[in-house]
View (cartoon, rainbow, N blue to C red):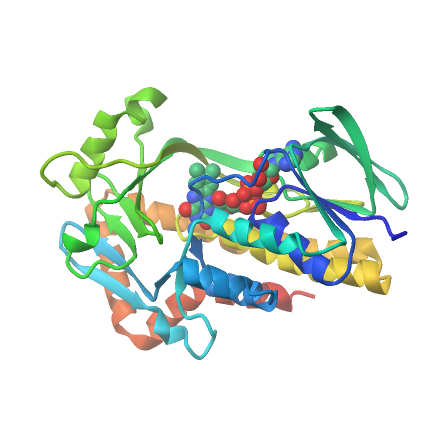
Length: 403
Ligand SMILES: Cc1cc2nc3c(=O)[nH]c(=O)nc-3n(C[C@H](O)[C@H](O)[C@H](O)COP(=O)(O)OP(=O)(O)OC[C@H]3O[C@@H](n4cnc5c(N)ncnc54)[C@H](O)[C@@H]3O)c2cc1C
């Protein structure tokens, strides 16, 4: 094969779906990942309908496998613990808009594992683990990518470099692209447990946003476990050890439901929450996808989904560039307009607003919020409008319409 490969850095959800899409179009690919195998960690767990449609378009049995592994959440709830009111949004209202009118609850590593298996079947794809991007240099018609391995630094020449290397992206940093935005003062604590919350909360959905005057939280079921996300209080200046301690987590979980005895605690993760968008999504032959170019708080599950939407948008343009000779700057500029503007106007605004709504302690705001949610959920027209936005259907359509 004479054609230089497209070099993709990072085998997270964005890099993996991009690699499979391009592999299927006979484009030579090198996908490399700094970890020694596919990372398995508790991160995103919700796939929205447009992401499922895109994944289904890959064929290869990927959608069938993830639907079998995951849990179908066909409704979700906003619960107010002061009034016990529950606003329940039924996702089958989207049945005439998408073949997947639900959220698929599945750990993101399950998708990357399924795709990792598929990639092995393509001769035009090389997947390399234990390879860490340290920098790159651009030529007129190529990119020299510097990679650190156990054997030292090596250089791979590619036609383009895709930085799918997450929030700390070395591809972005090497390019000198600013990552503007802010970091919230509080960290988020995510814990998992096998405790069956569905047996103690009446009619609990698999996805629940719970407002409480003292402490809001998100309670989600994945195919294996319940996960609870709590904000931590930065004014208390507690150390990471304290926030991750059994005592602290038991107290938080008992505040959610005061069961007798201790909860079994599975995973526990404390993480910083950012709202940031890269000042540009590309620089000549280097182009960014996913967390490498936008991050946001997890309320609404738009982080990984937005990254998957980037990857499909970019993949189509890379095929036009490589297989049809389209001008790469014009295509990347279009990608930038479609995806960056959307991240600025939709994803950042929505996720910031979602968080503000959950954390409000003012009684009037809380009452108004639940009133709005109850009224929206009870009216099929308003509920559909709400779901079209929250399920990211509107924003994907809007972005595709940008010329
Ligand atoms: C603790 C936590 C919880 C989260 N919870 C949610 C949630 O509930 N909902 C939601 O929507 N989002 C959530 N997110 C965000 C979500 O996980 C990300 O949006 C998603 O993983 C982005 O996918 P990605 O492929 O762009 O990047 P990543 O998944 O970060 O993948 C990047 C890959 O690149 C590799 N890599 C990094 N640097 C290099 C390098 N120099 N060389 C080679 N490889 C490299 C990494 O090892 C990784 O495999 C969470 C994130 C964290 C950290």
